[in-house]
Each structure stands twice: as C-alpha cells, then as structure tokens.
Length: 212
Ligand code: ATP
Ligand code: MG
Image: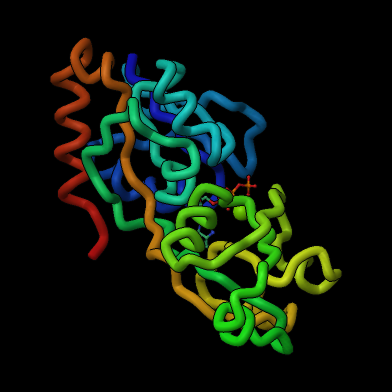
C-alpha cells in the first residue's frame, strides 16, 4: 500500500491533475465526505487528509509514504529528513512583509528601530530580518495575521500573499517580497527504498504533469 498525505483545499485540488497523470483517481470528494482516508481507483494507493502543517510530520515518521507540502511549511518544519524530488509548481504564492498603509516601514528600517512583527512563519521571518540586519520582536500567531497591525499588536506581518486582495481589504500594503512559494513532493526515505518501483513510477508521472 502507498499512502499519500494531502491537505484539503488548494493542495488537494491542484494535486488531482498530477495524480491523474499517474493513473490515480481519488474516489471521494473531501469537501463532501467526512472520511480522512480516501480510496482511489488503485487498490494499492490511498490518500490521507491532514492539516497542511502536518504533512511533513506524517511523511517523515512514515504515517504516509509521500505527500505534498508548501515551501513555507517545509522551511518552518525543517524538512531535513525528507526526500524532496520535485517542485510541483502548484499552490503558488509569495511570502511578504506587509504593514499598515500609514506605517513608514522604510523609515523604521533606516532609523534602526525595533520592529514588532507578527507571523505564523517565525523561522522565515527571523532569517529574513537577520539577513537585513533589522532588529525585530517576533510575535507568533496561528492565523489572521492581518489583524495584528490593525489592533496595534504589531507594526508588520510576514504572511503569504497571492492576489493581495486580503491585504487591501484590511488597508495593509506589501513592502517586501521575501520569497516565492510553491508546493513540493516530499517522500519518506525508508519508503523510497522499500517501495522503490511504485514510488519511482509515481514521481516520474508527476514530473510529466507539472504545470508551467
Ligand atoms: P489551514 O487553512 O488549515 O489553517 P493552511 O493555511 O496552512 O492551513 P492552506 O490554506 O490550504 O492551508 O495552504 C496550504 C499551502 O498552500 C500553504 O502552505 C502555502 O504553501 C499555499 N498557499 C497558502 N495560501 C495561498 C494562496 N493564497 N494562494 C496560493 N497558495 C497558497
Ligand atoms: Mg489557509
């Protein structure tokens, strides 16, 4: 049996065409079913639904043989023990710094002020500001980062942006692009040896269907 870990939503949806290229069809819709283990048209392949941030943990510890996870999630997790053969070029967005429209970020940086930064992505944020030589107080949040500058909890946020409409709706402006984000295929190291042939075939099929 090969177990693939996916998160519901965009990663699940955008992985379906890659699975199709490998001849794999998921037989249930996660938005309609309450099942966490979904069967496929292949008796030897199943999909498990986990939180996006839990995908690397499942794959690293063998709860799944492979999975799809965002670069953001992989950096925050560490990802050292995972084999990462493919950038799937799906779930694309960017990691950015955003501030309230009336906060002068450039001036704060220039003056060397301590900046309070709220984020779910503390590893990425810490590295980014360390590289710039900017002193920050990081405030760890688990969601709705946009609220932090509006309530005075923080001066800035580090968050994922795609269209920018959420920032705009909350009167925030993007002031720095930290990195481009897409999702990668991650594979358990032991499974790669034990289930070598079927996994290699899946990886090769996925590769042919990566969107441009
Ligand atoms: P949850 O919504 O369960 O709290 P999550 O926000 O991490 O978890 P998703 O929103 O499904 O889960 O995001 C999964 C991955 O998709 C993220 O890790 C990131 O790589 C990418 N992603 C997040 N937001 C966007 C976006 N707006 N557009 C494109 N890709 C995104
Ligand atoms: Mg989300």
